[in-house]
Figure 1: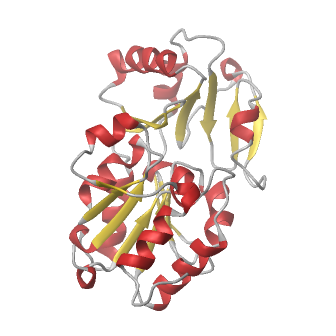
Figure 2: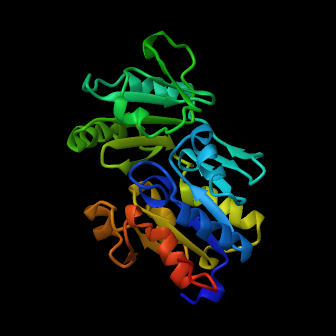
Length: 273
């Protein structure tokens, strides 16, 4: 990768730009502001809902295209909704009819609220400011279940793998899925992926994937990392992802400001301390 060929910087949020406290460091903000000053296009691509992600990216202090819910929504730097895609109600009804471990937390990402079958402290901790509110519901009582994303979480990865296999038996032609973390299983419409949404932005801005660099730590970042001219895997990414993407470089961890450090050394015209 020659840095003069890179025009676009793409980053995931959790486990990538955000530290373990789900915050962006001051150093990272300074580096991204300098990226903007040097005319790089910046895209943040996350599994989070847009209401949750927007205040976080605002903290960067520079214009950012925002891909959320793994590609189901795209917002411009001016917060204009450019693209949206929901899963149809019948498809979700069909999945929720499948028997699953009662300890698994089920979440529907709706436009203005996330609906869940149980209170989950770990999930709530991802939001440092509550802009996207949880609502406890009984899914059997809802008529319309259309949603941006269907999400399951449990402390046992193997239980989620078992559930995923059950769901895909009859729904592999309807859904794409990803483990954003080993304990977070997400289902989107088959057409939805971070890389697909990013392609729409690149086309709009007259760039190609070869002119982009991307950073990520989860399986929902896999296609994005493989598509760009340079894909960087976070040091804190699961070993299984590093093995799958063994041809890609592994950089420092999110808690060591791996993204900002790499950008400062490899992309910027001056190294920021």
